[in-house]
Each structure stands twice: as structure tokens, then as C-alpha cells.
Length: 452
Image (tube, rainbow, N blue to C red):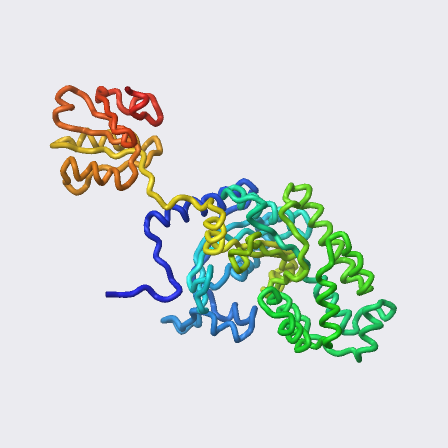
């Protein structure tokens, strides 16, 4: 007996039906916004991920040498792949480029709530626009997708931040800010210690899961003094109405520009009708180093789902780092496992029951007529099953019940002698006869109620 590999999942028909409903919702919402579907490979060069994230990433990859001697990896995320695709045809593609894709990914990490070694995401990205409206459209798509799934603002919250605000504040503590600013004077008094900005931002990204002392310890490890770590922590708790305090504190063009950009994105989100879902949260950092501007994460508003549902943000430098022309970009990638947890918690996850519109039941040598009826119904877009195992009348009826058939069409030898079919409503058990030449007839979805 073979066992399923750790961190991988099987999806039986009921669960797969619920997943398909959710995937269709995400994708249909993306299409309404004009995003176009792309297909991407399961394997890429391992070097692409090493160049992007460093040698340490190899430990998280399903990587190997293929039969051609190439070092390849099963795709752990989509962003590098679509960046490669944009670079390959950058001159041919109309800007902005708006793509979406739903597919599996693989990472060798310890499974936990909402995290598996094989996982599924729907990625939605805009390439070629630095306008705040592009960021707002990503937020709007995400909000619409959530509400289309049946969720409301009571169920989720988008925590919005800006990487350059974080980096700019840390830069000020590092003594690189204006010498006339409060931060510059503080840095001068502290001796201009070198701050590892990326390490500090990664610490911010983990702050929700750490005790305060441990978090401040990571900030001091990154080069802040203890007093600076406390001050930095306090600054990140500013309200949206008080963002100008950060500009005054830092006294740098970088922080001023980032605050202006963040305010413009939030204003655009207001125009798109999704500002109500957005909360300023400068503690939201997104751990990946390629993020450059506005970032956000979606959380369960009750906290019952203990980790981020999904996240996204702006990554303006990635296309250029892959050898392309400078191309601003912003995107988001809802993970299906965590999204399913939220929908289940909120009571809006699609049912895991099978749905069948018609079961065409055969009694005796009636297959030609049964096949014609089933074919006519399928041409109208209905889910139709019929017997393929030579079962008895009772066994077929039991099976029809097990697949939740709404209507059973009984094609029996005795009925056909009278040029009739029997139409049975499975919910009530009522049934009636109809002339064989009049079914399905002119109705798109004829049922017992239409005929009786």
C-alpha cells in the first residue's frame, strides 16, 4: 500500500468541485478586469532562483539535475517566471501587460496550517505602469474576488504598507537622512551605526509572530540601537491621518515620496470602492527582498486563521534585474489553501457535494434512445450521467441519488412501446410520462414541474 507524500494532497471529487468553484470565481473576476490568462512551465533553471534569492534558496527547492545535465527546479513561485516571459517579448507586448495564472507550486518546507509542499495560487500582475491606479486595481481585484466568494469586510482586512517608508526610516536611523532632521540629529548622536535594511525589514515582517523583546533583538542585530529599535517600532504604529509625522521625522525625499505614493494609492482605492477594506499597517513588510513600493497582506479579521491569507505588492526592479528594460510591476497571489480556510471559517466555502442535472436511466435494450436523450441534454450544457456498467434499475436509481441527480429520465422498454419516457423528480419522488419525441423539447432545462 503506497502512502501519499508529506505536504502533498489528494482532492476527491467533492472537494475538487468546491475548489473548482473558488478557482472559477477568482479567474472570472480577473477576466472582468481585463487580465489575460498565461500558462507557465513546472520546471525552470535553478540558477534563476539562486540569482534572485541567493544560494540558500536551494534548500527550499525541489531541484535536481535532469537527463541533459541541467540544474532545474520545480517552480516555487510565479513572479520570476512571468518576469522572464516579459523580458523575452518585451518589445512586442502592449503596455500595461495584465496577466493571471492559476497553477501549482512546490517548496520543500515544513507543512503547517495553510501551507503545503505542493500548493496552488492564482497570480494576478500588472507590468508597465507605475501609476497608483495600478496598485489600486490589484487591491480592487482582490477585494472583488473575496466578495464574489461570499466574504464581506467583516471577514477580511487588507493591511497596506510601503517598503520605501520602512527603508527610508531605517536609512534615517543609519545617519543617511538630512542632518537638519530629527532623525539625522539622532543618528549623529548614536554614532551612525550601519543598519542592514533588508534584515531589519525581514524582522518587521515577522513582528506579528514574535515577542516584543525578540523582535527588538532582531532589529538591534540589524544595526539599530535598543533605543532606536523602540523608536522605530513606535513610528510604525502611526495612523493614516498622521503619515506626515514620518516625513517630518526622517526629513528625506525618499520618505516624503513614499508617503505621497501610499496616500495616492489609498485615494485611488477609495475611487475604486475598496478603501473600506484597507488598513494602514506599516508593520506589514512582505519578507521578499524584491518588493519596492506599496505592499499589502490579507488577514482573517477575527484572527482564527493564524497566518496571512495572501499578499502582494509592487516590484519595480525585477524585470530590469532579469535583463529587461526598466518596467514597473505590481501583483498579488492568493494561495488557495489559506483562502479556503478563511471561506470555511466564514461559512461561505462552496459545498463539497456533487451536482448532477440529469441521470438517464436505461431499462432493457434502450441504449440508442438513452444516448440520444443524454446527448441532447449535454448539448444544452447540462451535467448528465447514464449507465455504463450494465446495472439493474434499483442500482441505477441508487447511483443517481448518490451523485445528487436532480432529475432522472427513465428510458424503459415498456415506455418506449408507448413512445414515452418517464421523468422522475428525485427530491419529491414524483414522476410523469412525456412523449419521447417531445423531450427535451424546447425548454433549456425541462424538469418534472415543467411536464406534469
